[in-house]
Length: 371
Ligand SMILES: Cc1ncc(COP(=O)(O)O)c(C=O)c1O
Image (cartoon, rainbow, N blue to C red; front, side, top):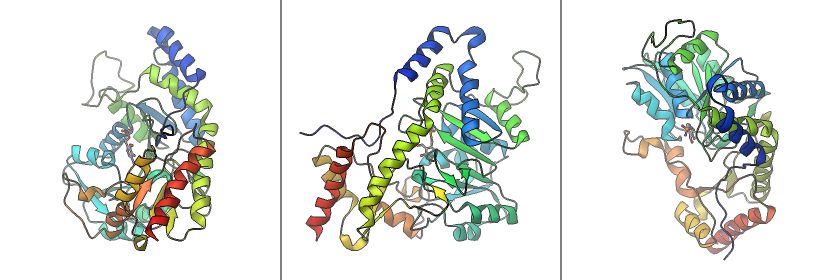
């Protein structure tokens, strides 16, 4: 049988190994924050943002940022129904309610018109998740934000490398968050980043991230408020430093893979791939195909076909409103329909052209058997 094609796999070279080794050997005592500060610096430079705080996960970064915005019981936070639960769970932990709105057919991201309609006096924030690296319509969302005085949070967990009109994903809202989970384009095993240009928000999240101890506090073991413990370790940050030295190469390979999948889909009107929007760069974290309803191709058919060829197939996110923790919103028809007839495609740095051909061949064969 052909070797297995994973849906994702990190690219770890001698550089990552040597930095992690150095952090484990020498990164203690006075040096215990060296790689952390270096990683935050490299990340800020890459994004062009003023402040960055590394965290143990993107979920933790979202939780602290939302807490710093004052999201609390009784508040509502608008977000796309198509999302990973990690975006919704911090809202729930803060006692607020996620309000799920439908997505656009082409970007699979928030529909701004529906966002505007969902605003109530309780709306405290809007989360713009750049799903799979596709970009939200930031122009419309930022206009809504300004008009109603409601902050935009950018969940850029999946969007390193994505750019909107020359600005990197994660830098346009009140704050942005990133994930370095092992499946992501840049990884530290587990990990995340909080970024903002707002000095006060930065100070507040810095305090929250250090068990509520303000940077200016001189007393030892003296919390100024109850905070969180969502820190990244120096060893993880060392791996992150090496990844950031390779960031252009790592993103570049993801773009190449998406371009190959897009090239195939371009000739087949019944398949929609991640969009190429004008004046944007899609960071290409997760290439996906959505099949028109009349092809009769379903997620189950695709999953079986990929499995039979020893290829991982990951399902498109189910709408959160269809899952047990939340109330159903079947009126979000696009978010409810797309997952039934779509599939995430393998994409990782060491993937070869022949691996990509093998994936595409499964799709060709599935289409042929349905015709
Ligand atoms: C859109 C989105 N938001 C948040 C997260 C949470 O990231 P983490 O696993 O680093 O907490 C993920 C993780 O995959 C994600 O896809």
